[in-house]
Length: 334
Image (cartoon, rainbow, N blue to C red; front, side, top):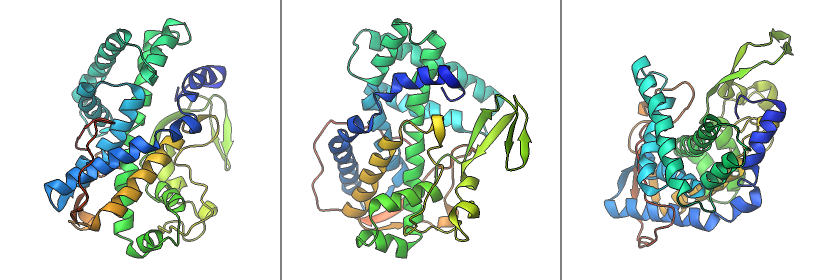
């Protein structure tokens, strides 16, 4: 779907649009909040320090998309590992080939499992679409399954990590939000702009000669979409474009793209981010980085910008853990 165009793109996108309708996504709020509270309660039980990526930023969006998708618990850690392996742009050719081989095998197992118990979930809907001929090949089915499942968590994981890092290293900005002077909705848009998890997206392809700002892109040429650069464009955001500023009101960032390919999961991502940040900064007291910001190590990827680890300290909450099985218990390291 990412590289499809015109009618073909509309056909593929239409199969997913119902599942990501804002009204349907809004119904997930109670379960996302419950999952965030449980993860934080478990962190508090283990003590006053944690790797926020492994213990919160990875499992929260992973479990959300896995439930929407209908992914069995035992397969969640495997898809996390496969997705991060694919995003690793420092991988060797042999490692890339191995990942490329394991991915279709994973989805063939998932399809076989889901065919035996189709339900009201996204994977089942796409399998039915293949059976009805709306998806024209098994390859198209596997590609759609992988795109939704992988893009549904790694991107949100990165924004959670980048957002926490931004807020903890800009305490005055954090105070504006925690004191209610700036609403979380506005702060999240600035986090999305300044801390976008998709730094660069390879590739879009020109279907014909296109002129962009005086530069001609010949038809057929590949274009690398540099979202981090676009989100710091002074023409769009003014002379303070490189500054993290939660009071920013004019914020036409491109973190969800634009036009026909605008991210289908934008409403879900915004909901997850609101639940994540309000829970983190509402339940954990004295949350602080345990290492210097310049020592944070990021994923070895020019596509995804996401901390690999984010050690933090906090005062454990006295609130007891939430007892629930909702949204699973997947944990994993970015």
